[in-house]
Amino acid sequence: MRGYTQDKEEYLKRLRRIEGQIRGLARMVENDEYCIDVLTQVSAATKGLQSVSLGLLDEHLKHCVAEAMNEGGEAADEKVREASDAIARLVRS
Image (cartoon, rainbow, N blue to C red; front, side):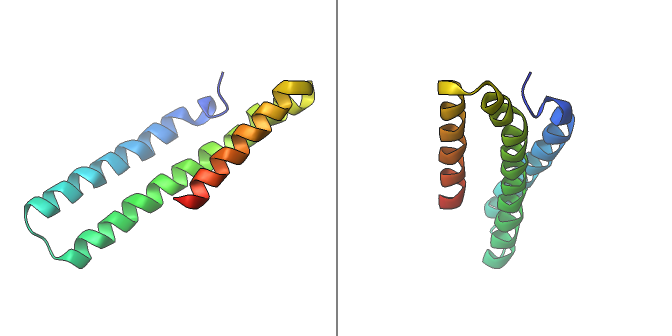
């Protein structure tokens, strides 16, 4: 079981909303909408993805990393390394 399994439907709902925003962005570009309006929608979609990312990271830390830390050893080191790498990717994006 993954850490986000309990909230899976909520994550799927948010991702579907973002998917709709992306389709809307494509229509805006196809229709030659005003640049600032398109950029505003890009910002909204980006914030939505960031929100999902932060939620998944929080769940990963609470469940996967915490469980590995309780077990200790190499598995714990690997989970912490994975989490650190994920944080670094999110900060760079």
